[in-house]
Image 1 (cartoon, one colour):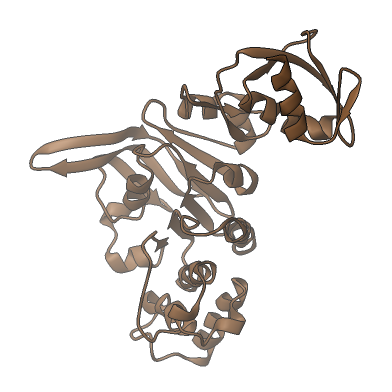
Image 2 (cartoon, rainbow, N blue to C red):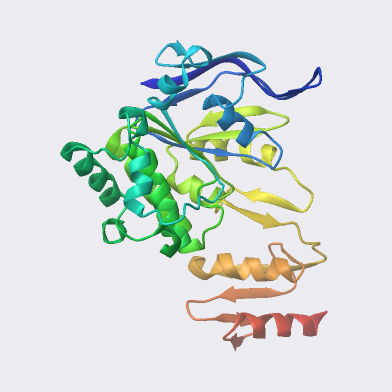
Length: 324
């Protein structure tokens, strides 16, 4: 079921009588119980779209609706009951514990966040446990790692108990293990709580694995929506990130560099080691052509060339240079 929809939405900025339209005529739909990743090149409008959907800035044209009600006509309190927003900016509140920060999420539901009933207190501890921070509930925010701090911000959004959660690059300042953990956590929360979670990210490889649906935004093609694999198959990723320097490799879901290929080899053999072999050869300027003069056989534990066993990629590249 769609919770949030847009009708002919145009986003951008109006300054001193001049209008800068970033995206126009957007027809979007955000569904309950799904994690949606908003992906696109810099300057394509990811943050502007999130801020417009959250009601922080007005659309230049068209409408955004939540459960049929136009967002622009809702009061700030009504929007706070429908949308929780987690921005990229680092939050620093002196002497605030995780419990204090998460409690702030209850503000739209109570007259004063410090006056908690037993039910409210139990709910706050519940959402802290949902992001696996129960052992840090009474730790100061300043004592947390970046990953723990981000989970605390997600818990605050959960405590707000809205049907929609919007996050602007929640993994931007995290290392790889924490980026993976946050993406898996958000996927699990969307399915468990049946909330609609939309996040912007540059983590294409993680988004392809974790997202139920992707909004692929670009200046040339607007916003293309679909299941990740469908957007790979129909060429949408290549169109959105078209570049002379790299290309989207549909075989593995990563970007590959366009190296100048001036030499050719023929490669066959073990498929498990083939991917890394081809990466190394491309970096060395070798294209793969069947029946080329040089043949490399990839085995389970190494390589063979000219009937000689080779044990490392470094050794393989060194022997290839002897042919140059």
